[in-house]
Length: 370
Image 1 (tube, rainbow, N blue to C red):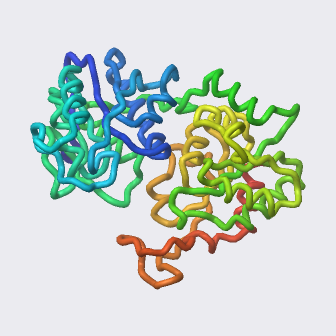
Image 2: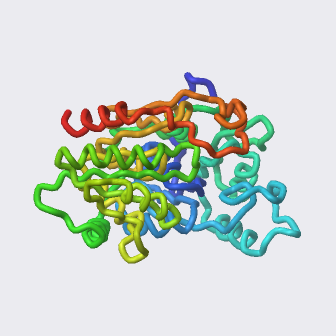
């Protein structure tokens, strides 16, 4: 495919599979492409081949995804690589669950199957086993060929790259809805139980965690920022997963102004739907580059995002006006000096600690009062 190529819509499409078994932020990156597929093939069933959390989160939620099929663990496709890529047919040593799953996918008789999971070394052969009429996706030099493919590039804007994959199937975007993601009554109820709304509240949600420690802005600065915004009349809530409970507690404990700890216990911990309900109420989100930030952007919530260099390029939303970005540009590890642009060193020291409190506070005030 060249930049000038535009493929026509495939005729007689009843069912589309999209392979993307990854995390929350990665799902949000795919939303424009999923909307484009649904816009171009409105009568087709759009099936996301993903993980258990996709099924739980998207069940009953209006949007471009009609159904989620939860796939079993497959090396290199949603789980660590500890086995060679799948062959075109079942391997003798393949887990029975994977063989059964492939049989189910073949029985679905997909018309289109899109690989939206990396460069395709492992995901392309896995997708080919579905037996779809047309397969499309990204392809690294060492990956098996699909019917139509694009070169896999890094770093790139992930949303645009996935839209380009959708275009291989003839899909072109219509108007991108805002919000890009529907919030349900169940989401709002869960959010209200975790944090009962107050009349006239100006809710600011702080998100100090990240799955990659190198993307974490210091907890002390999150606390200082929370105090500054609370003094200006904001209601502060600090969110994180249960695995981040200690980090959330540190931020709340360092603050002098009142703040709500949303990760204090399993009883009041927010699920993903409840988080969407709370984000909908928020006047502002201040977050590291992590899933809740991208959920907020998909919901149209003004957000301050603290990014490390290429992560901003990869995560920039298609509507950039809602994002106030603070950017760290250091590329060398403070411990060993290794450049981490192309290859990660063994250390987890923050790459965004050079972002100052004054910069983030100025962005937060701008987002709140623009």
